[in-house]
Image (cartoon, rainbow, N blue to C red; front, side, top):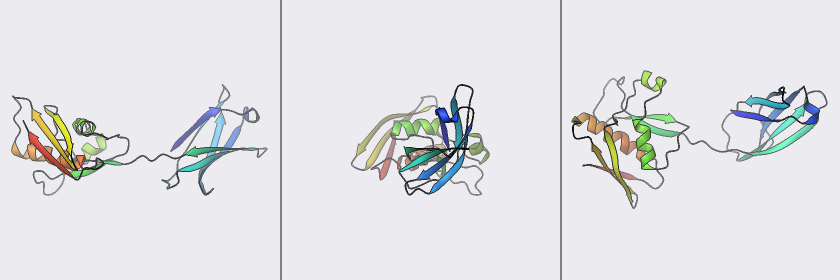
Length: 193
């Protein structure tokens, strides 16, 4: 969705304006109305499907006079990122077996950011779907370096924190599968201190 807000033009005071979202070919992707508010501003929201266009326009049309104003816009792409988690609802759960969970609002551009995201609490719908994280708060990412296309990670855990083999397999699988999305990374090696 796109939220449209701005200062109302003089011809829109106390009125309604139609707005159309067009792609770079002029095709209407969505249309609706914006209304003026008390302080001579307008607000509205349009929902639309993903587009391959990089540019487009918002076309505002007065509802009675048909006067128009076209505003050029640029579309930005929100890449959906996959984080990998074990799932307790799968019929056969093997150590180290992880499944993708799509996230569209994350900026995962470094090993540190991906690691921190894997430690965050899962969303309610993800928990209801059986997903959980094995990358517990007692585990830390001590070092990361890129050796050609191989990402080398060194992990550690608190001294009094015992890590069962299956949990360690899950941690490594979550991290390796998630880190392979970094640009230029084809292999991930994990070692423990």
